[in-house]
Length: 127
Image (cartoon, rainbow, N blue to C red; front, top):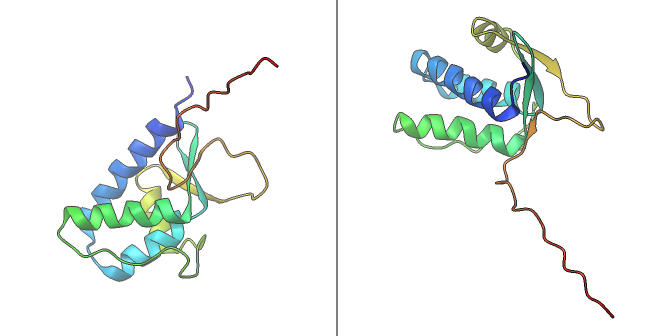
């Protein structure tokens, strides 16, 4: 059975919370941001999630807020898509594997920072 992108994102966020409880350091958050921004994170058992740069920043800062830590400016600070060994190993232990994002492909696992827009209703006029 295929897992939805939203369900995979919830799993990733849960696993990131676990990591955040263990490591609360700005340099870790910066590395984690770069590793999340635009990288396809594949879950053991199938499916993947790809966070936009802005969504990756929001994710990190939401977790920082849970620990009363100030937000960081992360989006577009450079290094997006770089996965360090420390982050790869930490997420691998949670069942995730990184793969470089393939720009120009239709990525069903891509999540951006914008809330979903309501469906557009088109009106048809008779002339």
